[in-house]
Length: 178
Image (cartoon, rainbow, N blue to C red):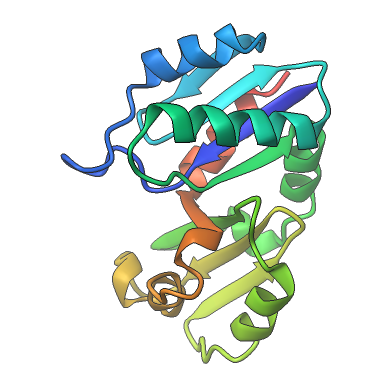
């Protein structure tokens, strides 16, 4: 089964450094095959015959063993990723200043996140809650920090439950899947 692994908040400037070549070797040492990465922000794909629960546990243990900071992550099967991508609304393909996906990490409280998201006042933004992620589009600003969802991401209660990727990265990952 092919998996998509999205690490949260790694390689941001000088902080939270994770070498992708090193991590790929560590994942291969666990027996995962065809381990690849896309850019340096923690986007990895690999194949394993193990079930998702086992893979998530192995990755949790690997990250805890090799890094002195917590690394929340999202783990999706290729089928889950594809299904979410194919069910996106039309606006996801529009030319907007900002399009992003906030993927749920493995420990995310999806019900609480959805309830909180429903309270957002987003006049210049559109939102779609998918199975794997929350997808946002902003019609007026390319600055993610000024967008309502950017402010939402900064809330401590939800900070480690979501990992952000822009539309370009999301689409490239989709292209890289078998």
